[in-house]
Image (cartoon, rainbow, N blue to C red; front, top):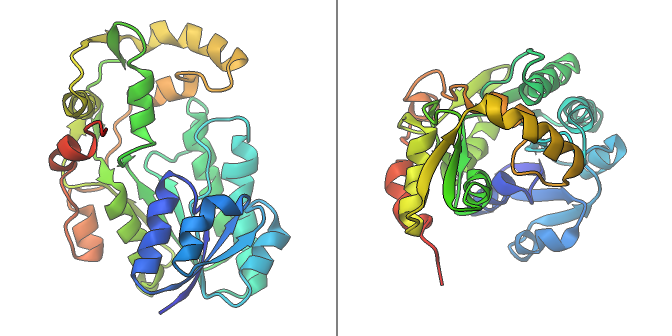
Length: 298
C-alpha cells in the first residue's frame, strides 16, 4: 500500500477521495486548515496535519515520507480566494513542494474545458495551473473530469439556488451536453490513478457512461425531490447584466458572469467509455442513481 498526502480532502470531491484511499488500505495523510473538518478521516486512521496547501513550506513538511501527493485544491469563483492564488499558483507550489520532498509523483485533478481563452476565466485559470505544474518538472498525472455529482454540494447547490421563487430557472437553453460522473466513481479513478505509473505525463479526460443535457440532469433532481415548479429558461445574455452587479455586491451570488458563459459549453470527455478504457471498469449510470440519492430525506 502507498503513502499518500491528500490536499483538498475536506471539499466536495475530496471527502469521497479520502474515504476511498482509506477503504483501499493506503496510508493517508491530509493537510487541512481546520482539523475539525478532517475528524472523520482521523477516526479511520488518517494522519491529520494542520497547514495551508498554498504554503510551500507547509506542503513540503506534510509530504515528508510520503510517496505520492494528490491535489484537488481549486476554486470555481474568483473570491474570496482568487483564481490566480489558488488555481494558478497552487499547482506551481504543489510541484515545487513535491520535488523538494522527493515524492515519486503527483496526481492533479483539473476540469474538462481547461483552455487558454480570455472569455472563460475559470477554464483559463485551470489551464494555466496545469502549465505551472508541468514547468516544475515533477512526475505527474492530470485527470480532467466532467461534472461530478453527489448527494450534496456541486451541481445540487446550483439547482437549489435555481428554485428560489415560483419557477425552476434554467440559464440558457439547457441543451448543452454533459457527461456527469458520480463522486464515488471519480474518487475511484483518482485512487487507482495514483498507483498507475503508465499514466505519468498524461492529461486524461473522464466522464460517466451517458451524455445528457443540463436540463435532463435538472429534471432528475426535480423528479427526485418531487418539485412541481414550471421551468423557465432565461437567455444568458439577459442574465449577464444582473450577474455582474450581484457578483460585485454579494458574497455568494446565485450565478457569476463567468459561470453563465460556461453554462452553454459542452462538458464531455474524449469518449463515452473514457473510464473503462483507462481503468477497466464501467462507472455507474447517474440517471439510475439520481432518483434515490437526490430524494429529500426526513
